[in-house]
Image: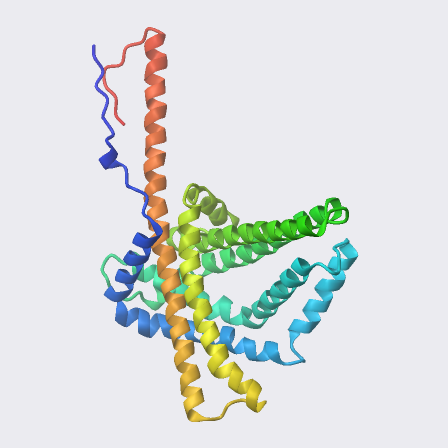
Amino acid sequence: MPISLPSMDQDDIPMEETGSKILRKSIFTFLQNLQYFTSTAALLAFPFSASILLAHLLLDSSSSLLPVIYHRLTSLFQAAGFPPSSELLNLVNLKLSQTISLSILTLPFALTFLLIMKASVIQALNNNHKKPPSFYCVFSIFNPLLLTYICNSLLILSANATAFSLLFFTSNLFLENIGFGFHLFLSAAGAVVYSIILSHTIIICNLALVLSGVERIGGYLAILKACVMIRGRASTALSLALAVNIALAGIEALFRYRIVRTYRHIREAPSSLSIISEGTLIIYLYSILVVLETIVSCIFFKSCKATYSCIDQQGKYAYRINEIEEELENGGYIISLKV
C-alpha cells in the first residue's frame, strides 16, 4: 500500500537571522524592558564597569602589574626561541600583558557583579510572565555561570598558548632564512591567525555562558554544546562581536580622553565634582553596553537554538526515510509512520 510521508517545506525551516536583524531585535528587546535594564541590570554591572575603566589608571602607573608581566613574558618568549626584534611579538606581548593585567585587577568583580548581572538578564529574557526575576531565580543559575566562566578562562588561556605555539614553530621554520618583505607578510599572517583563534574562542565562551544560564548546565559541557550550535554561524557571531566591541572601545577611549588624560596632566586623582560626575556617567554608559552585549548574546543563542533544533529534526527525518528505503528494499511493508 502507498506510503504517505509528511512534507517539510522551506517555510517550516527557520531562516538564519543576519547580524543586523539580531542587533535590531536586541535593541527592541532592550527598549521593551528599558526600566529594568537601565536600572537594576545596569547598576549590577556598574562595579564591574568601574573596575574595567579605572584599571587603566592603575596600568598607567609605574608600579602596576603591566611592566612586570610584560618583562616576564618577554623573557619567556626569548627563552622559547622567538626573535627578540620581532615587531609582531612586541605588539602581541604588549596586548597580552594588558589583557592579563586587566583580568587580574577585575577578576573579583567579574566573578560576582558581572555574573549576577548576566544571570538577571538571562532570567528576565526567559521570564514568560514579563516580570522582573526574583532574587532566588537569579542566584539559581549563578553556579552554572560561575563554573562555565572559570572553564572559559582556561579555554582562553589554552587558545593563547596554541596561537603562540603556532607562532613559535613558524618563527623557527621560516623567519630566520627569508627576506624582509616575506618576513612582514608572515608577521601579518601570524597576527591574522592569532586574531581569528582568539575571536572564535571569545564568541564560543560568550555563547556558552548564555547556554549555561538557560539550560542550567555548566563547565566544559556548555562549551562543547556551544561549539556545536555555532557551526555555520561564526560569521554572524563575529559581526555581532565586532559591533559591540567597537562600541565598548569607543566608551573606553572616551574615558581615557576625558578622565585618564586629566589624571596624567595633574598627576593626582581628579577631585573636581564635574570630573567625578562625568566619569560616573561614562561608567554608567559602559554598564548599559555590557547589559546590551548580554542581550545580544541571548538573542543570538535563541537564533542558533532554533536553527539547530530544526536541523536536528531534519536529521531525524532523513534517518527515518533511510530506514523506510532499506526496509522496502528488503521486501518489508510499512502501514503507518509517525515522525
